[in-house]
Amino acid sequence: MVYYFVERMTEDDIEQVQVIERASFSTLWSASTYRHELRSPATSRYIVARASSTPPPPRTERSAPRRGLLASLLPMLSVRQTSVRDFPIVGYGGVWLSVDEGHITTIAVAPAYRGRGLGELLLNGLIDQALDLNADVLTLEVRVSNIVAQQLYLKYGFRPAGTRPRYYTDNGEDALIMWTDPIRSQAYQERLQQLREQLFARLREEANEPGPLRNNLRLGTE
Ligand SMILES: CC(C)(COP(=O)(O)OP(=O)(O)OC[C@H]1O[C@@H](n2cnc3c(N)ncnc32)[C@H](O)[C@@H]1OP(=O)(O)O)[C@@H](O)C(=O)NCCC(=O)NCCS
Image (tube, rainbow, N blue to C red; front, side):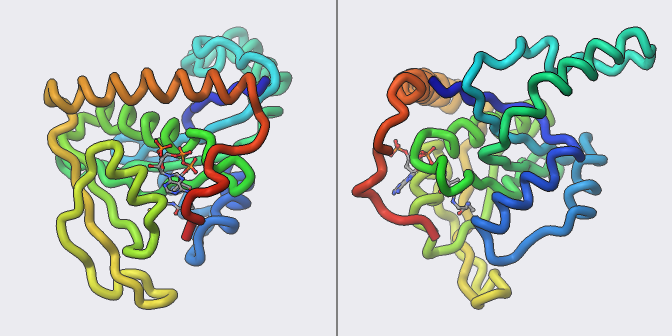
């Protein structure tokens, strides 16, 4: 049985995130770039997905607000020491707010965990963060060759809207620009709700059957 859950990234998570990043991308961010992003929560939100063989602690315990008193801090520290930080990070993602646009800046799943719905789980977490930041629409750039990621984005209502020629400096590849319709519209929210129900059913099913992955016959990534 494997449980997956998503929570906000902290500076302690950067090292594990960079391991997944190195396995996923050819241009990398420095640890200080992550730290800068994590210290700008009014415009940037980063999340991680963790895997656990036991049910995760309740969200209220995991994200207890900092109350500034040692008495309130101690229980929180003990929760993190004994549980959440022991669960490996299996994916991460980020969103950055520019006026009313949420830009998905990055999203990646550890290679061994791909094809199990975790990219979708992370994208859902990023949509929630974007809504929390009051974004009205979402946008992103993706390599024209990255069909796997494009399929994920298409599923969540991102539509191609042009290219940025030679956007990627490592190989001069073009970026496809994608945009959603307004994410607060009733139509988008209804579709999102439907997709979430399907995703949670899939994750429940796969948690019980961690055998061969469903994507054996599907396209490779990159
Ligand atoms: C893109 C990425 C995040 C997807 O994560 P994932 O956990 O493998 O994807 P999921 O299992 O959640 O699949 C969600 C959707 O993605 C698409 N997808 C996933 N794997 C696919 C594959 N092998 N072939 C085609 N589409 C695929 C499908 O639309 C899928 O929905 P479906 O299951 O209903 O068909 C992951 O492949 C990854 O980390 N890639 C490397 C980093 C990267 O390219 N990031 C995007 C940068 S823009």
